[in-house]
Length: 66
Image (tube, rainbow, N blue to C red; front, side, top):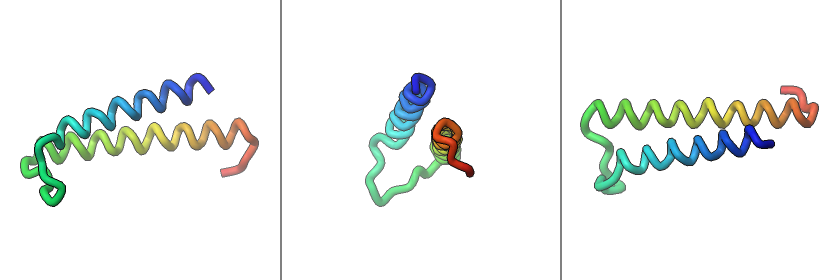
């Protein structure tokens, strides 16, 4: 379970990076420049990959087939 905790901390760090990129934008606004869009998309992909690793590790640990 230690690896899962480390992964969750990494996910939280990446989520904070997204919030920093989006800071100052209104809820209705989308990031206008391509750099910001690309950065946010990349970070979301990282979160998705990390999250799937936790799900797979947990399933294997519990003997659940995926």
